[in-house]
Amino acid sequence: MVHRAVFVGSVVGVAVLAAVVGGAVAGARVPGEGAVKVQAVTGLDRLPVTGVEAGVTPCAAAAVLATVTTGGDGTVTRNLPEGCYRVEVTAVPSGCQLADPIHVQVAVVPGVTPVAEFRFRCA
Image (tube, rainbow, N blue to C red; front, side, top):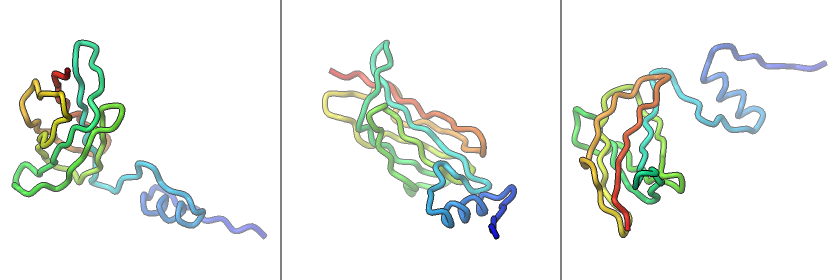
């Protein structure tokens, strides 16, 4: 006799199912949550800039909610509750200068991933 668990239309169900079978849910989001992508580029070819640190702050508050750092592809994505956020560059890699404004404001909504892009001049 084979027992099967079926979870329909539930992020919690997917997470429980993954826990039961010992897997992980990559990119699973809870209702009312979205994501923001931070992207750092340099030059006309838009080459990635690794190691850019940015703080993510709710628009209505001054406290930093999260600090993220770009990886080898010049990007990092962070899941966040739905709302307005300010993404601000807080650390620049050696040999680079920020070419654009220091912060970008984004609206996070489920199903859409806004990009906070920052351009740099790097030696």
